[in-house]
Image (cartoon, rainbow, N blue to C red; front, side, top):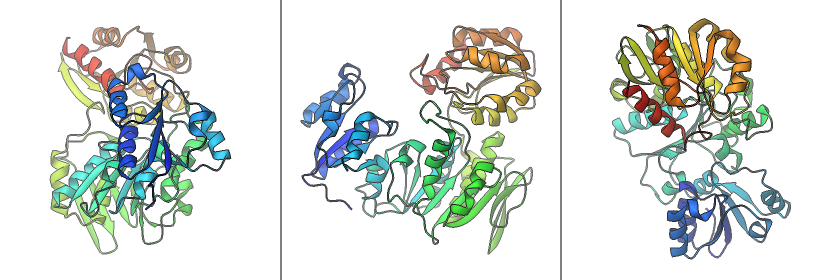
Length: 448
């Protein structure tokens, strides 16, 4: 643990995690100041709380003056490490860490950490439910639910913490060492943040950085990028696969997940599982494996598989209208996620896509759009580029609003078709976040 008493600490980024970090540091006796890129008028509640605590705050941008002279800088998720004031601080030898790293130094419970481009939230929540069903004291948080820093004063309250971690959080770790790490997949994402795809990959695989031989690592054997770095993992490795059997881990035979460990082989029938889609089979394989490694009984795992409904806005069935099924996949904000969603349907698809352009490579979508999408309706900032690169592979039109896109889909769709919102882009050009986009979609569908 760090001695923070009297230490000058700057917290950068004042969303929920940042504010929780400020509170934690105050309780530890640090002299806290903050820096936030948004103007104070947009964060009134946060501003009022900081005034109550008498915290010095820089609003509307980051200046070198606020960063220099600190003894520690803590970054909230999403803060870019390339900021000029951060570079100047690093040049002067000021330590810069993520909230994840700060929390880890005070957490006294073992951590099971999950990362990947897609599926990490579902897998995190699934594992948490499976362990809770077994009667274990489990905290679930990180990039989903409660920030990890809120678990940092838990002492021995938790048997295990199940934590979703993002590439942004992993950039700023030094000693963070999960008892078990899960890497679900890696596909292009956040290239509006990273200069190179390789930088994003390197951030993801930092999850294994400090693990030792006695720790566990769960890896997707079907993902070529994950397997490219497999030899660098020092922890004991387990694999999951849709494509073939594994020596130790879990695999899928078309109906059942088969768990294979040194001392046992178990079968989990997915016929009654509520989660649907090829991506969710991968999530379930990883979750079953993790839950069993941490001693959740098979019956507890099966019970959760039978009632876990999955995430809102992730391949969420909305309703059927005149034989046409409408699905909300607003959380499908990258190409890899959309690929998994398109692979989950055999029926003809009318795809609504587009949003804020992440500058990712769209080429992997071409074959699936040609073979499975009967019409593509594009919206948002990215629609022109998507039309240029993908429009020739199917009938393609553009809409000015999401509501207009839903109406266009309604006029095109025939009985048996699927209308799928799966944007392959973030939402910030037209909406507050992917949740708002999903809600607007569902409202438009429910008005049909």
